Amino acid sequence: MTMRGKDRAALRAEAHHLNVTVHVGHGGITATLRKSCDDVLRTRELVKGQVAKAGDLSAQEAAEALSSELKAEIIQVIGRTFTLFRENPELERGELPPWRR
Image 1 (spheres, rainbow, N blue to C red):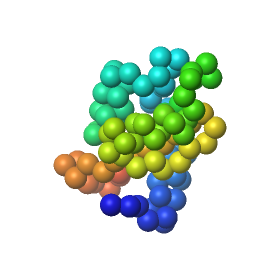
Image 2 (cartoon, rainbow, N blue to C red):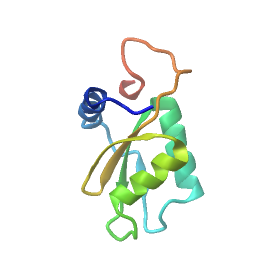
Image 3 (cartoon, one colour):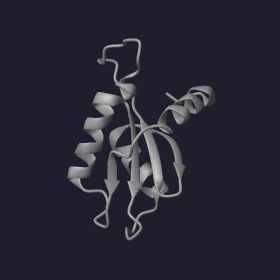
Image 4 (tube, rainbow, N blue to C red):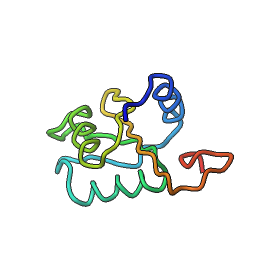
């Protein structure tokens, strides 16, 4: 399913306030990094990542690799920072979205 522009814009606005939770180091995308990113997507749906300056990957390359491996949507890529989203229908829906809790 492809996300609508309006939905993507709303998630970009939400992601602005998030702290970076996934760091892609000089080692690139490792199994541990994949697991960590998957855990954040499962529990919070929205994850902000950053690529190290010394790394071989660009933020766009890291976002594309992680999004395809984890079946997530790329919300945005700016500089060395990227944001991914994957809906988890099993999460309880309250007044606040999962990434705000």
